[in-house]
Image (tube, rainbow, N blue to C red; front, side):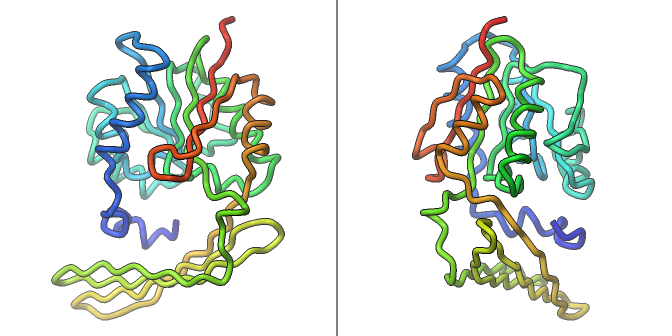
Length: 235
């Protein structure tokens, strides 16, 4: 995320029902294992909105690559540990009962090699019988290049118009998010460039299996993009 846009993240994604999503994730976890006092790590936690709700039921922590988003997460969730690191290479010298990676953040692993590396790193932080829950990005069939998208934030002293056109390059989804940001001080233009891997169901399940996890796939998931659940076998 562009550093300047971090302050607007929650306004831009105000349409997301984090509370309902966290409840659905909690239900998945409890179906897998109802042990109390479970430790949970939310990878690519952003501003900590899922952590905010999951921390009511689990000993939650968060991890993200963006210091700016993590600062907002810490303000929202005082007392909860947050870690600034890359999902491919983080090393917390600790293990968790549950690891989540939601809102399609795994798509920023733009290659199969990076996808496998991230899943291996997360799997290595799971306890025996631990659960990895990943909400994927779009599959190649779901991605529609040449489509135009728009979003508007309309506050009394803040207007943000975000427009982008979807593209496909080298098997990746590519889009530039153009933001027009209007405040009493003036209007400015900020562009964010995004490239995300378009992984098939087979790509995802193979990456889970390569990480040593037993995987199941829910094609609907919590927002319609699906959900992958991987279990680390008993040691």
